[in-house]
Image (cartoon, rainbow, N blue to C red; front, side, top):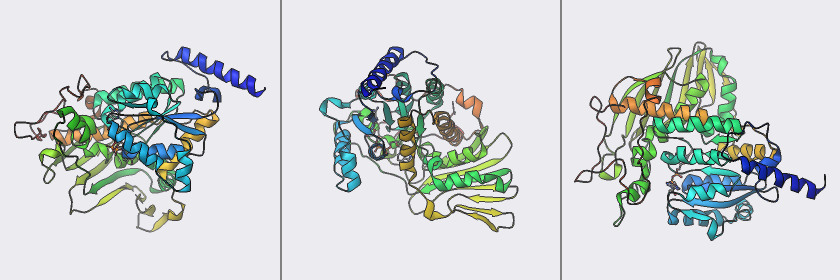
Amino acid sequence: MTNNASHNSRRQFVKQGSLLAGALITAPLLSRANFFSGSDDVIKVALVGCGGRGTGAAMQALLSKQNVKLVAMADAFRDNLDKCYKNLNSDESAEGMAAKSRIDVPEERKFTGFDGYLKAIALADVVILATPPGFRPMHFEEAVKQNKHIFMEKPVATDPAGIQRVLAAAAIARQKKLNVVVGLQRHYQNSYRELFQRKDMIGDITSAQAWWNNDGVWVRPRKAGQTEMEYQMRNWYYFVWLCGDHITEQHIHNLDVINWFKGGHPVKAQGMGGRQVRNGKENGEIFDHHFVEFEYADGSILNSQCRHIPGTMSKVDELFVGTKGKIMCGAGRITDASGKTIYQYDRSKENNPYQTEHDELFAAIAKGEYKFADAENGAHSSMTSILGRMATYSGQVVDWNKAINSGLDLHPKVYDWNATPPVLPNADGFYPVAVPGVTKYV
Ligand SMILES: NC(=O)c1ccc[n+]([C@@H]2O[C@H](COP(=O)([O-])OP(=O)(O)OC[C@H]3O[C@@H](n4cnc5c(N)ncnc54)[C@H](O)[C@@H]3O)[C@@H](O)[C@H]2O)c1
């Protein structure tokens, strides 16, 4: 085939694809032609959510060794978008300069507000979704509807209604053969992959432990002139509808590892939690510690703890206890029942999993391969963390099926800077906080 002929057939295929867009396509394995919406083989990327992680993920996409171009950006706030654009363009290293040459986002392809994502997604072959997780179900649904390949950050939702939306869209993404990678990067980290391959060395997993204990994260104090909606969007970590609480926002990484090695999610949970030091007005409604006992279908137990309290023990890790030994993920070590080391991961072989996520995703897309379907796992791990939160907020035993089918939807009906968010402060500026024994989990 001549270049022209190949070019024309690709254009024709893309045109055909866009005529089908929105309909459910039971596609054969997609040819390379499906993946490109332009006139050449450039893979066009749109970034939705231009904060810290969005900036990092965009950079990793640009450094993925494929013919990638960042063509559109969307953020709720113009100042955040501008900061991200500046940061992406200001790295003077050789890598940074290479990335810079792949950024093509003129003013007319920078979108702001609550609906900017619609326009950015339309311009791309691949979308990076990196807003606070409350928006993920809506953005993921749209990206799937528009037939895009997707990199989306964890968590993928903050409530059971959002989880159901992601699961439904994930099923359609599978039928359309859209690659979906979720930023649960331990799945793309060499040490975890090596340990996972060797998990049978410890026999059946009978219990596990997971920790995300550290000082906590930023606060973005209220500024004069902000509407309540803008304040909550800026200080999003402290509002459950946006963030999910820190058990969902960060501890999800550890819970996800346990589910991965166990080959499934828990069937129920009970636990305790509260807030002891992070209890100011600016700390919204979330807890600063949770301790949850998750039970899996085979009766095995995961003891999970996450704490954001300065001056306490810091530890982010996972441990498995099996009938024949233990796996210590952080140490990259497997021991037998007597405590003797039977496998030690060689740390010099560790990779940057954030980069590997993008290297593998974009290589698959460039080759026309359908290889990644991470959304269901992302949804189940997000739901595991939400189950834990429902248990600590209520103090009750929470059943997985009841929780995931509860319909609990924390989101506002209207997204607008003047709309009323789902949670409001009292006259003194404090937000309602869950009280175990009183708060209902549904
Ligand atoms: N995988 C990891 O290790 C890792 C690390 C950090 C963050 N994350 C995840 O990335 C996501 C973002 O975290 P971050 O640290 O970058 O937060 P951030 O606050 O730095 O960035 C979020 C950005 O999204 C924008 N935004 C908010 N609502 C939006 C909307 N409706 N439409 C468009 N833009 C919107 C904000 O204005 C902000 O610029 C979170 O889900 C977080 O859990 C993952």
